[in-house]
Amino acid sequence: MEESITQITEKNAVVRDWSQKTQREKRDSLVEGCIANLPEHITVNVRQNNLEDLVRIWNQWDSDTRGIFTERYGDIAHLITIHVDEQLIQAMVRFWNPAYQCFTFNQEDMTPTIEEYVALLRIDNVQFGKIYAKEPKPMTFKKKLVRLTDMTDIWAEKHIKKKNETICIPWSSLRELVLNHPDMLKRVNLFALAIYGLVIFLKVLGYLEVAVVDFFERLKQ
Picture 1 (cartoon, rainbow, N blue to C red):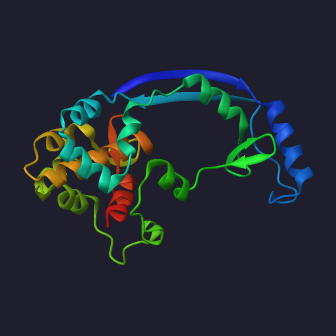
Picture 2: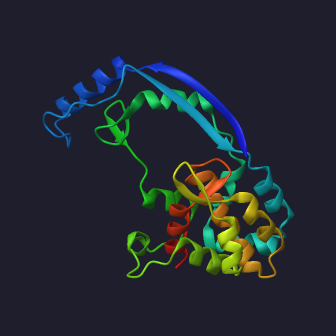
Picture 3: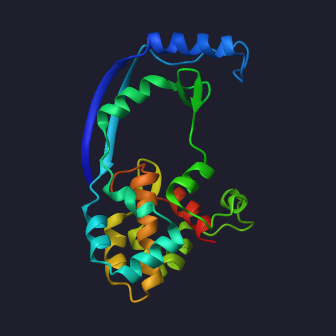
């Protein structure tokens, strides 16, 4: 699933010093005495999944299925066709402010909120409080996969993997269900889950991690 890996070393000392100076002059929310721990040089790894499977599936769907998907999940399907500009990412990392956990451009601190993502992607049915709420008795990853896929416990156990200490499921295990599941709404839901796991919250190439499934469960509810 890996499409590209680019490793670039950027010199950040000037940006770091400028950022700290600006924050102190503006007297905003930076904690007094805080020193940004941005290294002199930083290595940027630009990694992304090959999304040809998702593009092919989307193009095969008829207008009714696409309409149901958009009604439930907004415009997130457009993300599978957006080209990642590696040079832009290399430039942006120079403006990352670890003290704020956001990007600082000129005199503005910029970090996207869930509300802004909702507006940009036209996701109209999000209940923000429920996204972050934990279930009193959380289900296991296996049980969540069974509920999402309508498959058996044995199927879930077979396909759950551990990659770099991360519990996840391969996209290849879900692809057949997205293509051929008898329940059209299940196909739509699993396609949306794939976008969240392979595009928006990518952690392990070619896999959807348990945290994404947890988030998706809350979002869907």
